[in-house]
Image: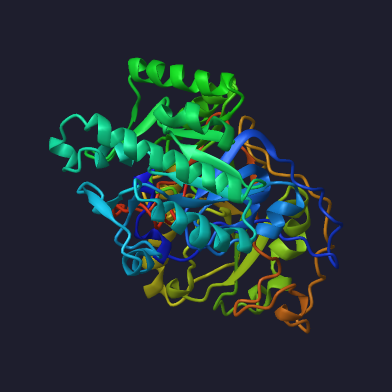
Amino acid sequence: MRSAIAMIFALAGSAFFYPLVHAATAPAAPPMQTEPLAFYVNYAARVPTAPLVAHALSIVHPDATVDLAAAHRVGNTVLAYLSVGEVAPDAPYRAEVLSRRLPFVGRNATWNSDLADLTDPRWADFFVTHLAPAIVARGFDGFFLDTLDAIELAASAVDPASAPAPNPARLAALRAGLVSLVRRLHAAFPTQRIIINRGFPSFDELRDSIDGVLVESLFESHDFVTKTSRAVPPADSAALLVQLHRIAAAGRQVYVLDYTDPTDAPRATAAADRIRALGFHAFVSTPTLDGALLAPLRPVPRRICSFYGNLTTVQEDQVTWPAESFTAQRLQVPLEWLGYEVDYFRILSASDLPTLGADYRAIILPRAWEIAPPSNHKSSTGSLLNATSVGKFCSSAVCPFAILTNANVSSPPSGSAAPVHLPPRRSPPKSSRKIPACSTTRRPSPRCPLAIATSALRPAPAASSVCAPRSKTPRPSTSTPRSPALGAAWPAIRI
């Protein structure tokens, strides 16, 4: 979990847009059903709302921008991350720790963090009377406690690469301090849920104070040396399962977080299925832990990019407004019925071509669309060909999309993840050169799109293409969790 705590919190936002319901234009959507035996982890600075609604339990950074009310409206729980055994150099509360002169017993050189001396009761005071009340006041439902196993390193107080066996007496004292901290936290906030990361040696003493245990890498993991995903050796999985079955038998929930290659959707789905078959809660993501949804749920792109506008000299081929385009007049309603939303982009030159993300399913090119002058043709076609190659080979941070033509638009092939079927929201506007485009928009923008961008969360398809994540090298830390890598499933549209 320490790998999840990096500089990502300084990065804003998420790459996904989620469904928006407009009472004036559409009937109220049915409430999203919470996926059983699935949870969600996102340490980004800004957490999207839809995953919080789709998962019964979510774990986020306590300082993140997050809509807790939306999760609470559907009865879901959101926990705040807290590192109890280590303090990272970028921890928001580090200055307060130093001003209080709370003692450290060494450093974790791997993550450049300081090891808390939990034998000093002032650490428990700090968590129970300073950090936790602020988290509860924000409306969180409890705490996810990380770095409990740091006491093993603190007992030896040396670099982990050369650490001898922990001093037994020192380890016992540190464990007693850890147990006291968690028990005091539970006593002070009895209605708040507490989930711990591992901490197996302390479980028996903590069982009555916690609600569950989270573990990482049961079946799939990430090799930080080779920067590749790998299967966990069967012997390691078996040893971990012994602990997890013991925890489940004691009546506590088990949460398993595995890591897979975001381009390998079947592998992610298979890992989640194995976890849930054991009765455990599953989440498969990337080691950046910025909310990439690989399994059991994956985002399905539902936006369609439609180009319009040209510099043709043929008057009858002129398309000045989105409402005049073939897409608006003939395709928008059936596309919306299939669950898609259409965005309109006026393209007069190669510089107008938009950069599309994971939430776009396809591009529609009008028959009469032209790019002038001819000097722009090479760069324009190159950009579109690159888009198709990305969709085919999935080798870039730009996520895949297909290129469609008005003469040949087909439904997703069998075997693809089907979109949500929605009732028609409106009739397409009649062609009229007197209607300015923005008069028909639901939300004006510089490009005056007729439809608002949306996306949806759906169960992960059995097999599909997945866009590659943006390349990131996580900076080690234990307090400031991270932000976005894309992992959206893309069932291709045939042309």
